[in-house]
Length: 412
View 1 (spheres, rainbow, N blue to C red):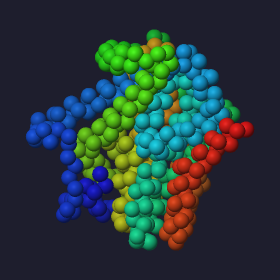
View 2 (view 1 turned 45 degrees about the vertical axis):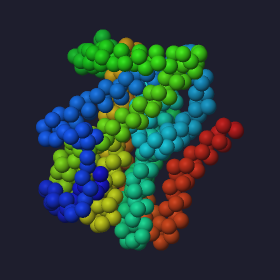
View 3 (view 1 turned 30 degrees about the vertical axis):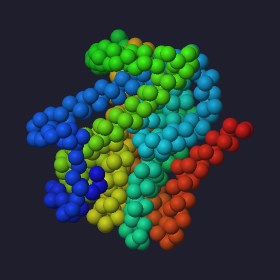
């Protein structure tokens, strides 16, 4: 997607024409010979089908987890009872799938199937760290030009530093006071069940409708793996659900990029660089449009490397992208009703509240706000001087340290 947006001046309120030779995004339906209004209609119907399959896949994971664990989910995830291990599982899974949306959707399904919230919360935090790998890798594409690479790597790692600092603050607070678990539980109770008022009535009604629509496909998929014995049936359902989520997130991303690239460009050029609040808002809006924080943050890296936007202008945009990406988990939560629905909704709210609290505390407090900027600036300078620093950062933060912590904790 980065090659379809023009590099306009930061003061421009509208996108310019794409540069000659830029690659045009092609819809899967265009290959069927569709064009114009029929093509656009097919694209939107494709999005609707994608959301339907996403919710069904999450429901399948929840059901599969129940079958696989036989009601003993806590003992199955005993290895992740240590919050630091659960955090690293979230980091590794997100880095491997290159999608925090996949991690959060899977986690929502697992929580509905019995995964303890105390394990799910660090996993959701880990998803925030793991998702920053994509834009960091994108910045490595500018490694041949020292100055461009310095700017690009700083712009990429400001997202890394922000999320690392957010976890460093809120994970201890969560362990000590249960900030996210308590606040998300209150919010889930207020927006679900039969005694939560008007909002709860709407949420419950919507959840019932969605569950009714997705249940036939979920039952069919569960039946397709029912020939497997016992727990293996549940494991197969989980694997199938994860596979569907990976496929549908990619499908939705492709279609939404085609549908929203023009509007996303308008949001980008009209908002970024006009102040921190508009930067956060534009990051959130663009991420909702394309359903991928990795896409929106990676989009900014070439613009930062070329000097179109400064590090200070990129920074709030990435904070907004963190908030925008939480919509996928909220959509996934509607796969369940009743008690399961409340738990799934709580897990989705955990991800939303964590990113909102992080924006308010880390970005909202002047002293803390400067830390990601200083860290990213320093790392960009040393990586531009010696490329081994860049390699050490990528391999260490996203692979080496998570694996080492899991190994050490398991042994001890």
